[in-house]
Image (cartoon, rainbow, N blue to C red; front, side, top):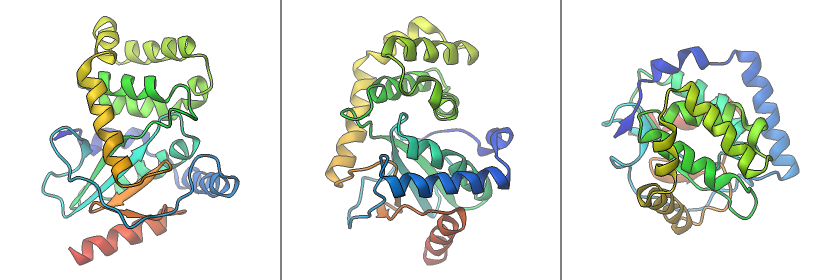
Length: 224
């Protein structure tokens, strides 16, 4: 599986205060309906494969899959919380994965940001681009596509990526097919909001706190 040692993300871990503020933001997003209903359905998704972007051991007892949209405010609000979880469980039998579910009708830059992350992955920098897109979402989220693409180019330069290759790969059949495969797996599972989380391939209701998320994972570990 395409993965990165979670210890590489230690510099990005936020303080407890930031996490608390983030959780508050998540609650507000739910309250005002900005992009995520958090309603769980009795559905499952395909198992992880070599094509998925993951953190954690391949033989993990518990898998956590997020279906996300890089322009989604709720996804950006969950981002630091997810980093906390990845750090907390880095020495435990848990694997984290991200799959694309761009909300094309709502977010005009959802598709190109998904393409940018996938194309960066073809140069070995998927998670680095993933992080930049979420951490700096406010800079490109509502910008015209040309301006957003310029921002992505700046991220790519900072990651020492080949820009020509990035642009070519963004329009390639392989990147298009990867995103379409993610979207189909989500649609088949009746995913209708982002982020949507699956633990051991089963959809859960979106947790509204770090402790609530930990309890769900701990319960899954205990049951495995």
